[in-house]
Amino acid sequence: MPAMIGGSLAELRMSKGSVREPHWHTNSWELVYLASGSATVGILNPNNDQLLTYQLRKAGETVFIPMGYWHWIKADSDETLLLLFFNNDRFQTQNGSSMLTKTPLKVYEEAYHIDPKTMEKALDPIEGKSPVVIGPPPPLSRKRRRRR
Image (cartoon, rainbow, N blue to C red; front, side):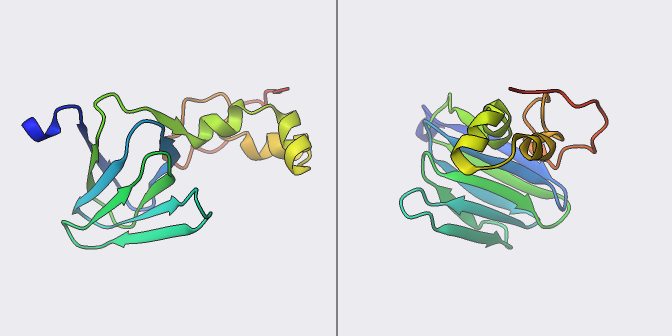
């Protein structure tokens, strides 16, 4: 499709309760198109910290997500199919799980006054794993690792 030169398309299939983890794209906007099922798209506007929530219920409904906006998608029914359009054929994604687990525990203490042991326990289900992407992560089944 000549109109898609420099852009890309991804297919996202989800079952009820699945979540495409919070993330943002540093070099692309995203258009979410509902092909079937139902989903909720959450977006945090970085200009005013307003949380925007869109419920997609009918095939053909869309949500536009500007470049750099923190967002996530939750399937509200089984057999949800979304088509994701990007204006970059090499779009970059920063996943929330990577951002959270790669931040040293000391920074959470210094910036937010969160006890490092409390934060370590909270992050344990996702620590040391690949990005969650579609979650939630499986139940905790490994020994704790220390991150400092």
